[in-house]
Image 1 (cartoon, rainbow, N blue to C red):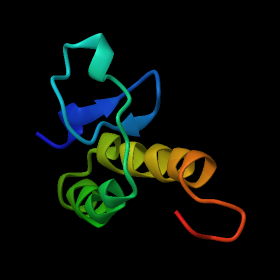
Image 2: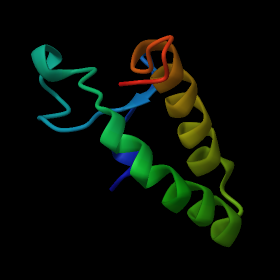
Image 3: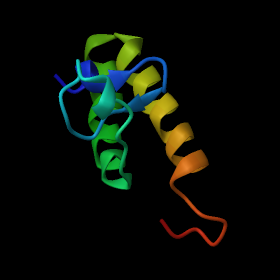
Image 4: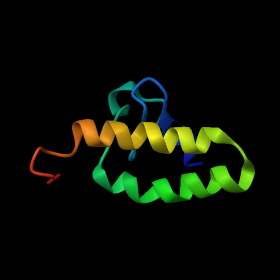
Length: 73
């Protein structure tokens, strides 16, 4: 279910909201990063690299858009 929340175009894990509603697409909060270890674990356990890719892409976008120059959020 977590992988289903990965928004391919935005390369983020959507925090909440209806995934089929364009007005809610792209909602991202720093708290989503707490799920990333689970995605890496799932990738290791299953051999499915989609989990690791989603985690990697999400953290790159979080660093770009959520973390300020002073490292605050």
